[in-house]
Image (cartoon, rainbow, N blue to C red):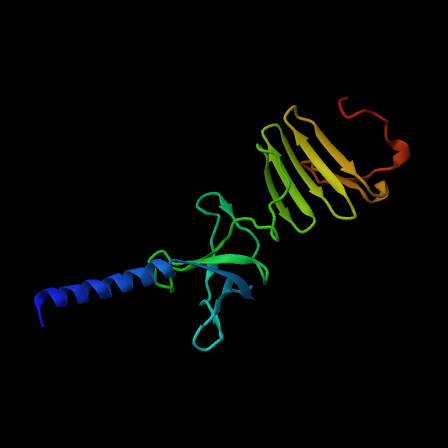
Length: 191
């Protein structure tokens, strides 16, 4: 056995190992199981070509959007959500996590302007632009609250006004009010 031949075999084995790690670093999949108590998910990574059985990831945490002083936490991804299994070291294990994929035709991004930040969950939508913050219910029972840069708060209600309540916070106890249509003064949006 020559020295050159043995060196080439070592390099070949190292290259195969490196290719395996690179290929395992980012795997596409979809959520098939969720554990709400531990906030973990399992992904279906496809079929094993030898056995024809589904390959499932270990239980992994969905990637946190922020874990520092400002905490942002998305809901636990529902079953069927397309995600990627990310393993920074190339070895699927304790350091692996699930990350959302880019928008697709089936999972399209919300409609938004170029300078607008949008969060949607079910029939609830939050929109933030440089001069406005809006929270709205987009389903059958529509309603919205706008907070605008000039200090105005505009409530839009598409339902029975008798169901709308306003809470005023006071130092010696909060007070609740119901709106009555006959007590409202007609106005325009810009008044």
